Length: 363
Length: 247
Image 1: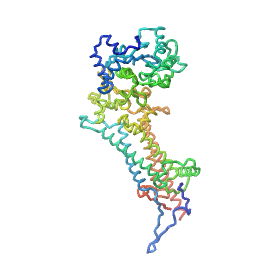
Image 2: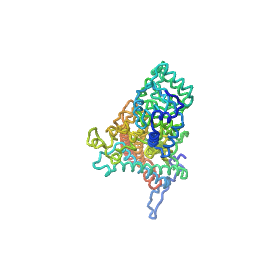
Image 3: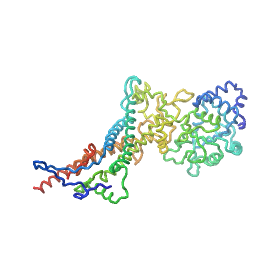
Image 4: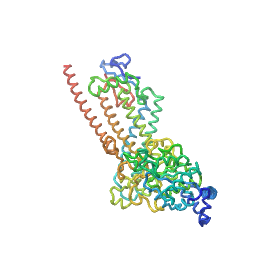
């Protein structure tokens, strides 16, 4: 799938793209990454001079929704990302090669681009029973992952699976599906969570790495700050209704028709870090809240195990009960109140009795 | 540091101090000790008020009021509730901090709610005595200038620890809106290292509120009860600062 020594610029010129279009692409990418006007020329310069970055894309325990999202990227178009910007040397889902021919590429990339290729992982390895719940090329996926991670420059953990575990790691997690950062240590890991992540976020991360030859700035949890530093809630177009105190109380009520805030319907926008409310989906057409449904928090750790998507207060499942903080708190406060009242009653009775006793004693 | 006073002991306040006026009528002179200095009392009442505001507004942030009608731009219900919550939270934080600082310069009673002398055998003996007193197994309570050992334990856990937890998780949650460049995030962002999904931080913050509700109920009940039943003033002490002994 192409050698890694060519530059992005030479590849697209060969494909008949004009220099003018190339610069348009650079400015657009700079804008979507939130970079300043000077960055466009730096991107252009980098793409003209730097060799394309080899990328190995692997699939563990997953549903391929990350790939499905990725191939729908509009800015940049995925064809630009895959065919021009990066040298996608291996992706068992979309590559032409198969079988031993395909597997040979892994060894080749590892030897030829030691410490220079990006390992993009979609899905995660299940560790139970020696990893036999995900066999890839006759070997447990975890072995393949560890082998390729060893010589990688950095690892991109695509989606909620690779970043957090996702539904296959839901309690009781029989296959012991484990996020990448718990299996691979000592390599920089970029988490790009979401189920799936937004297409433009994925290609944006790839563009950044290929352009600047370094990883984007990451937040405390290893996510690129440029896309994950704000909550859905912070940039939600329904936010004015939240501040005003205007909520959808029930599905299909008048407030729902008026497009009020979905907070009471369990929208996880206030606790979810992602770019949905700014970048949106399908080329900026819409995103869940715009379609009238609350955010389910799919880019957050453990979103699959946090009870109903439609509850405001999270259910707590300790001690075999399933109640939210208010129900537990009110029960506890009620018990304390009853205890206080009982104690006060006993105190009063006791005090009366003692007084009478004293009076008897004194007389 | 243990302020237990054995009834009639020499070290205690002079319990037999009795004065007589000119006409020979005798008045009972009640021995008093200055316990709670002004900053302690001010912090107490400001914190009490802030906590009440925080509980009410916090509850309505979790369970908002019914939808208001009209234009979004004409209303700011949730905005005002959240503003009150954040304002009261910062007042609480400032006065909690002041209270900690005062523990360094104030009298030894001002330090009582910040530690439990776990290693002292005598302390546990007296805790047991207090538990027996509350279980109606002791006829006479002991006298204390400051908090009794059980009260000290309750104040340390129920107030100092719980409120510290609420302040830390509160600022962490506030930093979500203030942004990752904010000082709140720099100081308290580590909370999200413990709970990566802030949904869990919300739940814990919410449970913390109910723990404080339980504490407040016990605190007020114990204060009223001891004011009546014990051998010293309690409620008026937090106003005047003076503890009166009345045996």
